[in-house]
Image 1: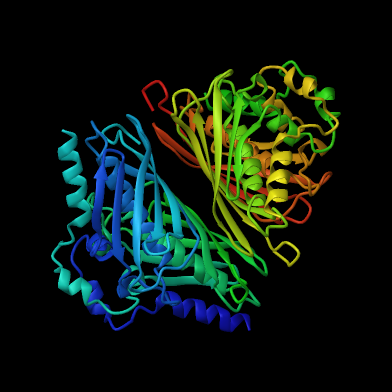
Image 2: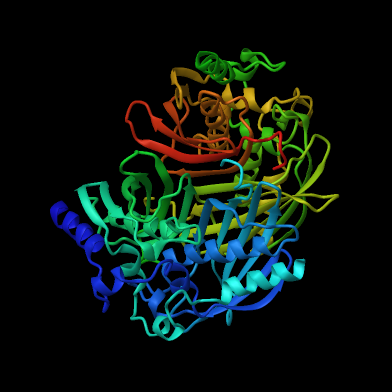
Amino acid sequence: MSKMNLESAKYYLEKTSSGASTEDIDSMPFKFFEPMIMSGLKVDHIEPGRVLCSMIVPQRLLNVANSLHGGATAALVDVVGSAVIMTVDGVTTTGVSVEINVSYLDAAFAGDEIEIEAKALRVGKAVAVVTVEFRNKKTGKIIAQGRHTKYLAVSSKL
Amino acid sequence: MSKMNLESAKYYLEKTSSGASTEDIDSMPFKFFEPMIMSGLKVDHIEPGRVLCSMIVPQRLLNVANSLHGGATAALVDVVGSAVIMTVDGVTTTGVSVEINVSYLDAAFAGDEIEIEAKALRVGKAVAVVTVEFRNKKTGKIIAQGRHTKYLAVSSKL
Amino acid sequence: MSKMNLESAKYYLEKTSSGASTEDIDSMPFKFFEPMIMSGLKVDHIEPGRVLCSMIVPQRLLNVANSLHGGATAALVDVVGSAVIMTVDGVTTTGVSVEINVSYLDAAFAGDEIEIEAKALRVGKAVAVVTVEFRNKKTGKIIAQGRHTKYLAVSSKL
Amino acid sequence: MSKMNLESAKYYLEKTSSGASTEDIDSMPFKFFEPMIMSGLKVDHIEPGRVLCSMIVPQRLLNVANSLHGGATAALVDVVGSAVIMTVDGVTTTGVSVEINVSYLDAAFAGDEIEIEAKALRVGKAVAVVTVEFRNKKTGKIIAQGRHTKYLAVSSKL
C-alpha cells in the first residue's frame, strides 16, 4: 500500500511528458518562464500603486483538475506584484523577493476570463509589500489572494 | 517620471517575447505547466512523509537577474509539496491547495545543483500541511523555504 | 561576543517582569488572553462578511519600541478574523485556525486610534478565508494586513 | 438568522470580561503583553542560530476550546523568533517584523508541556528569516510551525 504510494509520488515527480518531449523542454530559451506564464496578460488599467490586468485562462497553465495551476497563480502573484511596485513614483528597482503567500479560494477553468488586481500596500526605501487578487471577471468571485514582499535596497547587502 | 514608470510596468506585463513567439506559446499543449517546471527533477530519496529531490537549475526557469525565478520556486513548492502528501499511508488524493507561502533566502543560478526536501508536518483526514526547503547542494545554504496547506476531503464541498 | 549574545537572548526569553510579578501572571484567570487583547475594541460597523472595528492602542499592548506589539496584531487578526466568519449567513461555528499570516507595514503608537477591517474572502462548508487590515484612523496609512484561514467542519476530523 | 449572527459577532468582539474587570485590564502596566505571553517560558538549549524552549501551557493562554490560543502561538513565534536572531554572531539589533506566518496542526491543552524550537534560516545585513516549531514534548507531535521575517537595518529607513 505504502509502497504503491511511494511509487506514484516518484512517478509524478519524474514524469515530464505531456505532449512535450524532454528534449523540447530542455532546449527552451533562457528565461522562458515569464513569457510562458504571462503570455495573454493584458493591462486594463494602471495608475501609481495599482494595476488591473485580465487574462483568459490558457490551456497550458492548467493542472490535472483542468483548472488554473496553483503554481502558475503564485508565479502571477510574483510578476504582477513586481510590476505594481514599478508604478510607484521614485522607485528605480523592483528588488528581490522576500516572501510570497497565496490563499486559494476557487477554481478558474480554461477559457474563463480572470482579472488580476495588484495594489501597493507600502513601498518604502527598503521594503515593499503588495497584495494581488484574482477574480472571475464574469461572476466577481475571488479565485485567489496573495501578498508579495520585496526588498528594494538591493545595492546594499540583503 | 511617474508616466515612464507606468509605461515600464505595462511593457513588462505585456511583453512576452524571449526567443519564443506568442504563437509558439499559445499553441503549447494542455497542462504544459508542470512538465515545464518539473523537467529535470530527480527523486533521490523517498519514504512515507518525506521526499528528497535534486535538480540542476535550468536556463528556462531563470528570472531577469539570471537566478531561479521566485514564481518557479513557488510552483515547485506546490508540486513537490503535493507529492509528499501522496507518500503518506492511507492517502488517496492530493486534494486542493488552500495556501502556499515561500520565504526567499538566497539566489540559485543556472547550473547550480539544488536539493528540494519536502516533509509532511501533518496529514489528517481533511487538512494536510507540508514544508518544502530548497538548498544549494554544494554549499548547503538554504535558498528558500515554504509551506503548503491542502484540503484533502475534496469529495465533500470545500 | 557570541556568548554575550546568547546570554542576552536567554535573558530576554526568561525575564517576565515589567511591573507585574510572576505570581500575578500565574494567577491570571482561565482564558485571560482574549480580554487582555480585545479590551477597548469597539465595533463601528458590521454586516454579513464585513466587520469594522476601532481601538485606541493601549499601553499594555506595546513592545520594547513603544509601538503595538506584532504578536498582539497577529492575535487581533485571529479574533477579528474569527468574528467576521460568524457574520456570514448559515455559519454555525468559527472552526479552528489552519493558517494566519501578517505583513507589518507601519508602527502604531500608544494613543493612536486604529481601525481594523475584516472581510470574508470565502466562507465555504469546510474552509473559510478572511482578510484583516489595520489602518491608522487619522492618516489612513496601513499598519498591517493579514489573512486567516479556518477549517469549519470541525465535527468531522481535521 | 443573519441578524443573530451579527449580534453574536459584535458581542464576541466587545465582551472583555472573563473574571477580569475592564478596569483591571485598562490599568495594566506598559508593555505588559510580553510578560503575559512569556511567563513560564524556559530556555533548555541555546546556541548560535538555534533556541530550544519549553513551557507548560498556562490557563491564561487558553481559547474558548480550552487549548492554547492561536493568537498566543503567533505571539510566541514573534518573541522566540526574535530571540534566535539575537543569538547570531555580529547581530546588534532584532529589527522590526516584516512578516509572520503560522500553520496550526494540533491542539495543546492546559498542563501539556510543549517545546518551542526556533532556528535561523538566514540572518543577513538587512533581512533575517527564522522558523519556529511547537511540539508536544511527550508525544513529539507538531502543534504549529511558523516563520518570522525581520528587517534588521532599522537605522536606515524601512
